[in-house]
Length: 427
Image (cartoon, rainbow, N blue to C red; front, side):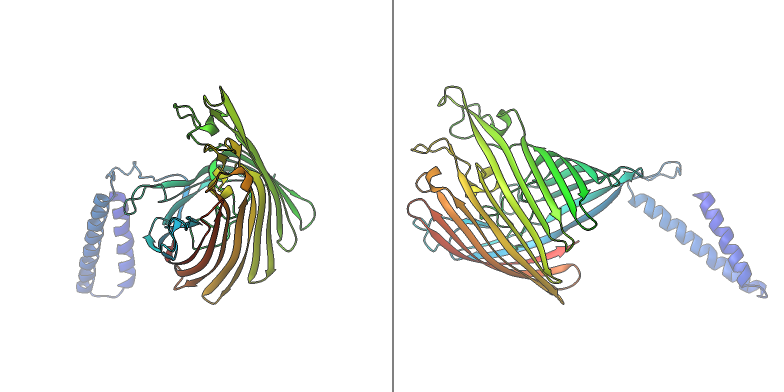
């Protein structure tokens, strides 16, 4: 520190000397006094800085180091307000309409900041062949009361990327390999439970890209993922979680082709099992979970892009399909049966035009009625339209109108109109 200050004095002195050639002795004395005041001020500011930084010392051999890697903070602050003219499950966001033979035209209003998101991108090191990166992302939909929500882990993974070989390995929690697209909605659930399947779970993933031509690429992805099961009424009292108890991960895979016009077509699927230990079966019972999915991204104009997905499968509750239903566990004629469902969504993104962009879409999930009990959900659809208006570079105002239709086996079919608005501060 002292050496640095001495060097600063020397530099300032010679600068002053050069500027004061021909000046009088009194002028030089005045300039020297001013320079001393500046140095004293700098020393004072340095001392304040050292006090403000925890762990700082006067020993210059000790350095305060945050990390040898590069960290980039990102996310947004978001306040959502929503009005529904019938009771929606969950309320802060919409997934389906509750039975109207129990709550007919029961309107509700919700206000929440839970979707506020915080993430960190980590890059490095890069040895010229293998590039290392990582990501951690959270929001506040982890439970608890509305004004004291808990943090929920969304993403937490590391990635090794061999760019020259076009090969990568990912380890940690992130989005499923299957059905990787999302419509742009103000509603938090992006059409989950109404046609858009796939969620986030711990996994080990490998990706390989191949050139099929000068402008055509093939991407192959495969993952071993944690099967998220349940401990419910048909399990023995020890509450063994059925995904863990199967003893083997879920296998996911996807192959996609990127065309010269940036059109992407993908085919994906998964297969796995849940195991329920129960006295009902004498020992245990296995339930399959599987899906087959198509996805499409199609730019049709400079300012218009269409995205779509469709699926078919069974026991998709953990993948946000089957309108949240995986296995029929209630007593009845269809007890202990995988619930089959099919569905999909299509949406168009329009713009931006100056400071505004639009999105419209439709989604639906159709459950096989013969697999569920009376009173269970058999059909769920969502038609939506929204706009995002940029108030400035970082702040957006969004408004979304959506119509929801949920049908049940037996009585209780329900409709709801939802109006949602949000202020979003991105960083």
